[in-house]
Image 1 (cartoon, one colour):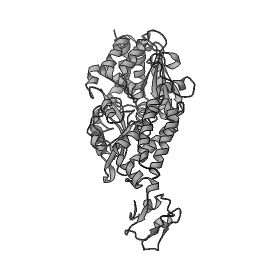
Image 2 (tube, rainbow, N blue to C red):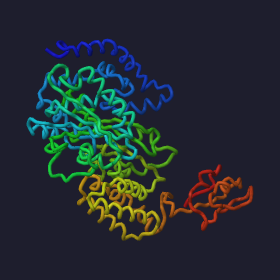
Image 3 (cartoon, rainbow, N blue to C red):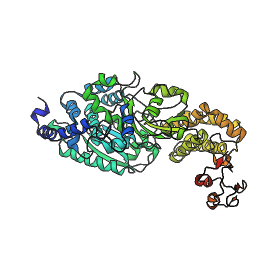
Image 4 (cartoon, helix red, strand yellow):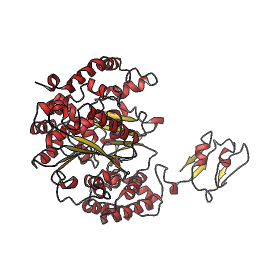
Length: 532
């Protein structure tokens, strides 16, 4: 007999489905949140028709605060199956067979990780969800927690059932108040309905989840630093003497996966490992959620099968580059990723392919850059981020990233010669090979990839003292062209009064006094001011 036939919880679930499913089916039939969007019908149709949603399957369909909506669409059925129809090894075999790899960055096989914790035998174990999403421009995990919180709770409970854990923690940054609030409500509702806590569904299996709020340190996205923080210490990485599945939280076997990884688990148990493995590529199964941002017409969350190309994401889904400009690069993997030039945009996006071309999947950030972006300054920006977020525990990361930032700053100011490029590559290699954790080991990826693919821009900065993108402030000059109508708007808005000229006559900029703020260019009504 199944729990649906024998347990009180099942009677509640049946009542919920009878009450809520018809209304949810109406929403699905109407596609009211996709194709019939009143304000943006064309955007909605093009934006969604190329996607395949698994982690985001309930977005716009259910009320995130309603456990009844989630259950009505099959929620917690996978947990029921894991408890009553499968043992721990069978669950792990299903996850392993699906080919699911961790969506947090490294892409480690999820089933292999779970197997490691399972093989430690009986005893106290933990399940931890890494919700410390800190990449600039990334909002995949936050959106999943805000839009479908029960999916990750169910995924964590299934993991607990598989490895023999009775306690889980969600490490989430306090900067996500809406996600925190919705997770708290979701946990309380699931406990009230007997789907979390003691004796789940009357089965004898218990699994509880609690939140731990981080204060926004990027390094706490690294697994051991995250665990240090949960344990009440400063979030700094530990030496990798043991895998966390052997000795993790409080020295106990621990499975640590990110939000998107857990959101895929119920779908895998519901539809089977073979079906999930049929999506994507042989090396990288399933779908991936990307935060498509930057110089693109339609930005937002995009979920596509692994193996989809950058061209398909940026142009078919994202609508291409605005204002008729040319695309220059796409950066994947956040501050730890690489910048990919257009000649690789037709390659499939998966873990192996991105690694070959000098980038990483990361957690799913995808930043689009156009011809106005300076690749040297892009590398400098991400290095500045890594310097700020380094915990300082190891010398290569603490000192090395600062030296790289100083060198990149010299390049953007026109204060370096060509020899600095070899120095940047050598120091980047040293930092990558000797840093303690993934932050330092990957911090120089933007530098290495931009020097490799956009070396001509670096050479222009160091040899010609020019920025081809007309972006680097110290290498810029502003000029007023013959299009000037003498309206005096630029002169009135110049903070240092370096623009002169009579009304209705062409104005002139004093290059020695100009601070290159660009204010004149932005306020000119006839676009008579250019930068060179």
